[in-house]
Length: 231
Image (tube, rainbow, N blue to C red; front, side, top):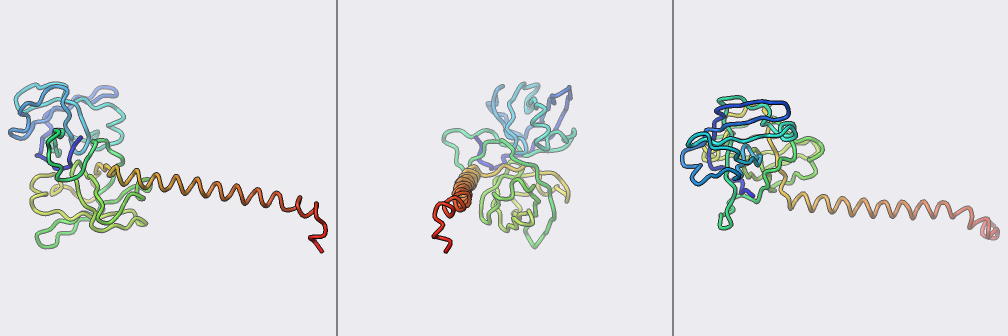
């Protein structure tokens, strides 16, 4: 479990690619690795990864399987690039953002950037499959950062987030450019409610259609059995 509060930036120190598997070595920010053991979970740009080795102080290795590479931005990483990192939350951790699993739901893309004074606004395009989860003032995780959707146009397929200078300092968002891919994790409570309501509506509509079809099919039979009703 993670909180969506990015704790620092890690630089890609080394990448080793094998068929179906990518091994990643990250140079971690100072102090981030205190007590970080093999088997621990770290969110890297919002993707929950397991520490597989500690090759040197302030460094950790992670293995990424093919499915994760296909569903996230990690397959496009190159040495020297940086990612947002957060360690898994402890039981007593303050949840300053919202609860995250580190399981990416969809790839989004940066549609536009606006820079009003002392602010940085990102407009992010979402694939059609996940637009039903967009709500103004709702939570969403972008590259592992818990953010609030300020403006939403679900029909057009985008939402906007406003970033303060501190968020830009602690994350990779200040370096993002239009067209860049982004990892999205939908807030689980929102997803459960939306999917449950949709399923209930589908069931009720199916039942109503079945009843209507039965009524139509019974109609001619009922009229034939009661010719007086045609007079």
